[in-house]
Image (cartoon, rainbow, N blue to C red; front, side, top):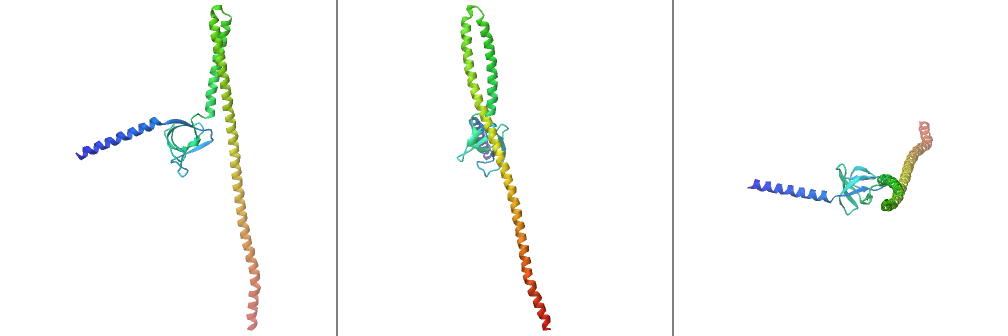
Length: 227
């Protein structure tokens, strides 16, 4: 009886675990690493936890939950889980990925526009029976031109964001170089200060020895005179 009860309890625990796993999987949302150089994914919600992986801008993540400290529990495309700062996540892909998608849309719209122009040219030279087709093609052409203009404006914004990111990356590299240079200078100054301390000790020892030697000689001479 006890064995049967234990088996029922174990089966119930498995069902509960599978239900929780399904709930977590079903509630996972998709987010992307924002336009930063890179961010750290840690094993827990805080900087005290070890770094599990370095994520690049545009990496696709599944969000599994969030904590009160500004951290989000995420899962990478490879299945690895960890925690990242919520402020570095975005609901939209990175600007470079959006730019590639917009370029494809622009190319398709240009192709469609060229086909419509060709059809419109044929329609304009056709018979009067094609009047309705002409009006429809003209209306479609205007709509495509409007969409193309909107995409061009969006592409310009994406390019501007990409240039700004490149500028910030160069500034960061310059700051890192300045930090390394200052570290080397501090090390050189530390070595020089240590050398000056040793020199001062040697000088002090020489002065002290110069003061003690005459006294020692006088004492020895007095001892010899007393004999």
